[in-house]
Length: 400
Image 1 (spheres, helix red, strand yellow):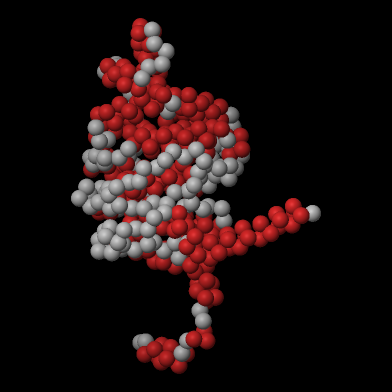
Image 2 (cartoon, rainbow, N blue to C red):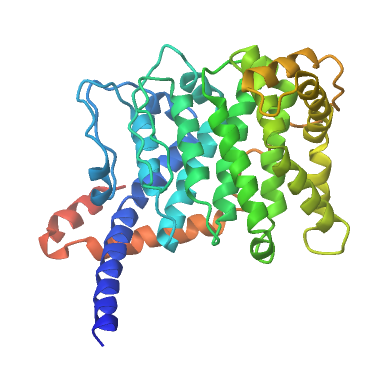
């Protein structure tokens, strides 16, 4: 009998902690809604977002999360974007409750608006505007030691934030909407870089690894996930990011060697792309809810498969000629460089296009519910006993 009692007590503490965190998150929803309205409706507000302050300030956050990292140095420059990225890194760790999911969704909507703004992108990619941002990361088993980032452009920090979300939320109760939003922000940032030919000095392999890991997760849990959601829509968005790198990467990747590394990763992880093609093809050949999206996914893999099918036999032939079984990365890269000229790829349209964010009609119900929630919370937290109603009535009477 002692074990169930202990379990009950444990659950009681857990539920108390979850409830406290939910209240802390909801307490910031009013501020987040105000930030959203400012970013969404007032494009000039981006200037305020990026305005440097002399003092660093900790983000408004659940108090129990801040203990995980070191405090910011007072001398570090900061701005609203820095604070918002830090806040996102904290609340994005938890997507277990409806309140948490709604909060993260609102964060991603704000990030979407920011990533669509030309001026915001120019500021985030400015190599003269460097910030050291403390992103909070979810404790995970098997996670390699994360080297603390120095001062860097905010576009780098944004990519770090998005990669962290991709890597830390692969669970059977997958939030398709949040992943679509996350990958959508990645796509918008890349579209800006392609359009303006901005070469961001970023470790792009981290993004490629995260996206390939996400595809592996989808494959491993296909039977479970495909019954609940359109996983092929997410797969299509991920593959099209790779297509954007393949088709236009030479115009925005930091160096030719980065482009070589992209091909190396595609070839090295060919099994994942082979399997995602086979799975999508299987769904595209039978009548079902996801048939059309699965067909789009199979078609989107044409260049990835062309790269794999072109270079794999070249590498195998070279290995046989050298009597090698385990080549180094440099040796593979050398084979890739020597065989670019004979590779034929198909030009794919609209890779750098996206549907711009619109509140109506997709998010109307969400914002109505959020505003109502803020109003209810505010009413519950007002201490009417401490208010001087006579003064309030006088102020109201002065309003014309």
